[in-house]
Image (cartoon, rainbow, N blue to C red):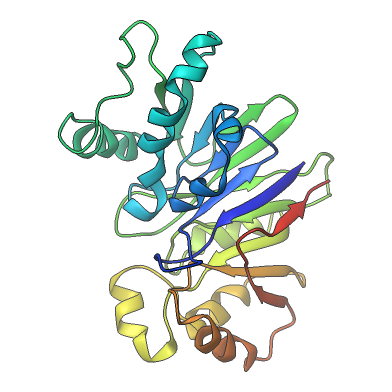
Length: 261
């Protein structure tokens, strides 16, 4: 298995795309503007989209991808692309995106019998299987209902690739990760320490909060920081680098490929 980083920025600018990861060739984890890094053929090969929450920087490309691949998937008689998310997230997509006003309802197009998208609810703690690949739904704490995901290793004890999604301080996550545990952790840190109040209100992390969160990991872990705003990467990573951490911490980069057992 491998995970390709299509986008990992907290917003957009030249060279910055918002969150999306490609698992192998057919599963997206979040669908921000990073999906635009895929070719049309690559987009047509996506069968599943796992969504962490309803915010635009994580869902913007779902409708655009559907529009791009409808003809190809219909001609090949491919089944719908399945969008997996919490019921509240799917309800938000139906009401606010696929409503015929913001975007056409691709859960009923090209026709109700053969739509290009299908919405599938999930819940925290559920394990999804895509062939031999297993993904666990993790708890997250955000301003809207949210989850994270763990792509589990191929054998017990091999560790997981964990993506927290957007989350503030989250005791339930660390309780689960102590049992899992992660081999690689992708965690968001959206603000500098002098923006602590903003991070708290918006249920994101700043470096000081990140330090307290990572202290709950039992073993040294490879940690990648995601969701930093454009222009803020150096400042945020400097604050993180000044901490005395037993973990190896680096900024995630668009185009990076992580290989899993």
